Length: 113
View 1 (cartoon, one colour):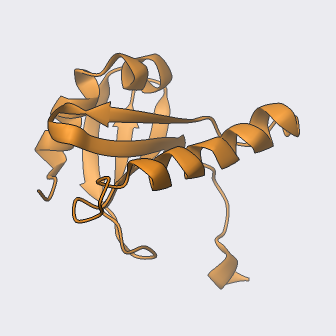
View 2 (cartoon, one colour; view 1 turned 180 degrees about the vertical axis):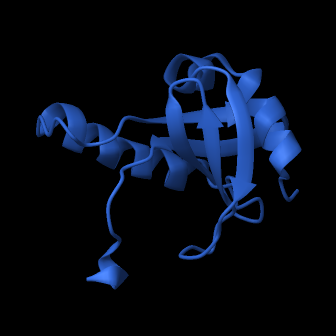
């Protein structure tokens, strides 16, 4: 099922893991410029975040992919002790929607260099 701005806001605001990282989500905008996934930029009490949705057509609805990518962010932040690496979480919203949420990092993307 494709997500909408409204379903993402509702899902995140009813998920304890998301609330612990982001706080209350106030707004959402679909941004899919550089990915094959649904990605939403959300504005929350604790800043801006990107929420990547697992592919519903995958065997596991994207759970493994979202967990793996979240673990990379955790490695950078905690194991490699990179203080400016963003925090990220993996969680599951209702209806088996697997997501990865990551803090926004301001700066240019690789294609702008």
